[in-house]
Image (cartoon, rainbow, N blue to C red; front, side, top):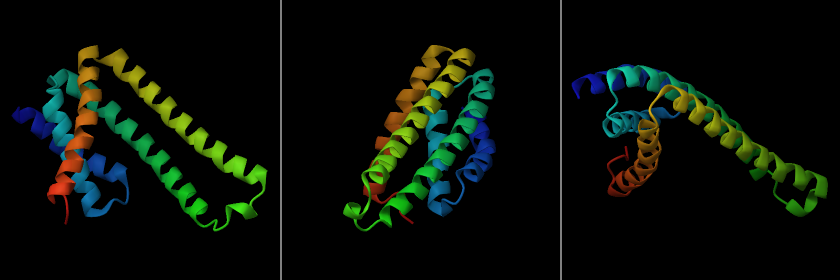
Length: 149
């Protein structure tokens, strides 16, 4: 188990850098996520060498999409009156959101394929389950004030 913690600690700087401007809280969440995944996946050293680079690459691409979505949300919020937009403009905003969601889905499929070609399916199943349970655990920690700075 010690070796997995060491791997997580070594990977943390790359993950927090990839996250971009998340501040102290973002780094704390990312650190917690890496530790959580490390514990839940219980990867062999060989599997860890394969998993973490794929995971980090995936996170970088997801962060880029999140940043793009955030920028589009800011632009959309600046529109004070939807009635002032043409139907074409409204349709463009909606289809733009569909396109972002499709790109997110394509990214999921891409990295599922990478994981599937490199790791046992049971490890991948544990990863997807751990991602879901992580979200619940994170919400619980926020509610309990454990992640508030």
